[in-house]
Image (tube, rainbow, N blue to C red; front, top):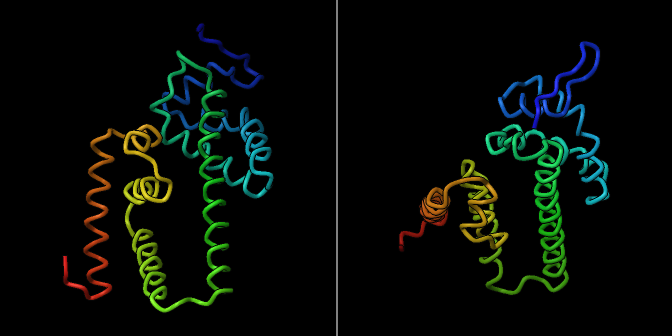
Length: 193
């Protein structure tokens, strides 16, 4: 792919933006946003159907892309297409969040209608405590645990999605579970292993 330059008065060419983006030049991030944010926003709006969510996810796409720019190679693909791929992942994440929220609301409504039977109180408390403790775990361990246990993703899927080595993902899961176990012992006062 030949390197394309621009005239003094015009915006940079896509190839120039892509190279600068891959090199970590912040002005190229701004140029990429100006050039492709409408495309990303349109993809998000069509998939999500909510302007606020689409705006939020569009911002997330560019933040994720900037953080993961090391995996972008301007010699093998166009930045706009790569950003669209990042957008698809972020859209899928938002749709999964919506599904979980709807499922949780439906479950809560069902429990409220039926009344919580004896024994369910303890299970509900355990779930709330686990969710709270999970929120306190640092990144990327928190995201890895959520992907593994809430979204049923395999270790290789998580490694691929987060662009992490498989061994790192496994270590984060193991350490995260040990941390949760220790914290739950403290919270519940249970000394049993």
